[in-house]
Image (cartoon, rainbow, N blue to C red):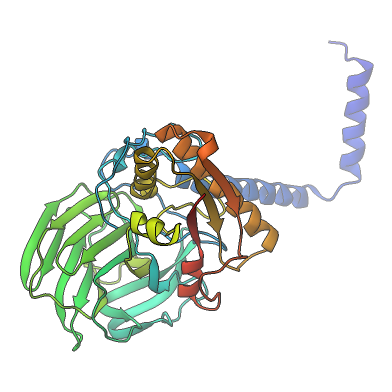
Length: 412
């Protein structure tokens, strides 16, 4: 077959370039490097996409994907009252994840952070600096794009907190890792002034959870095997009540707690199979609860919430925010004259301009969600971003930064 003049010229150009190029072995090596880089980039992109994937793909309760470590200006990972107003739609807006599996989820994080550790500035291979060792083998390790406390032999560690009676209302959130193909136990324990265990939540990520309080087993629940990846155990408590969760699944709802006066927490990890690398915990957040949203609004005309959550660098609302958003939507539904300014705030990490832009985008996402899911007229809601310009706390400690990452709702 006769080749066109253009094809001949292209062939000659390729031949000339090959004559002047590096040897074939070197070219092949570069090609392999490029292919490797593209594959690694694709893997990273797939991991990032998994974070944003809607919960619809989960086939059992509690299934979540690994998430990247929180970045500058990110809200931390996660009050108690029944949701009011219209129930949010499942998904329904690009501003938020699908919340189908979270319709019975009523956890709202405490609004004053007492202890916060995301291990972001820890050295690999070292013992975590903000924890005390009771016994066991622990070290900081990096996996799935984030830092963890790795346990390679059963042991206890405790956050560095002065023993003190727990607040009348408080929440605890702790990330942990499920290897799916191995057995292991995690215990989040309440301790007394002597450091003794007086209650715990235990999680075997292959089949069950248990909650013990003051020597009494108050809840035992068989759960589907947790998917491989990051999961979160949560406590929402008052002096007389207790609720516990694994991901969106409520595993205990204790209406009356008596003879129980803990002053702190410890974490007990049992890899079960000696030497396994699977057992590890991540971000730990302990916060004091506060006044209800309605009380805040009536007293000061302003609501401060840490319960509207986003992935790092994203303005897409996470499904765990459903209860906070339902409470806000309920207030707007009950009071048609109520107008709110939705205001996003970050800590001081990162570039000022980036923080300002991200906080504005997040405030806009909340406004969009409330308009779409609660049919709130656009004229009743404003959205503003302030970045790091209006801190509530210092930006020199993890707790201060966690308090500064928030959404506020100001009465207009």
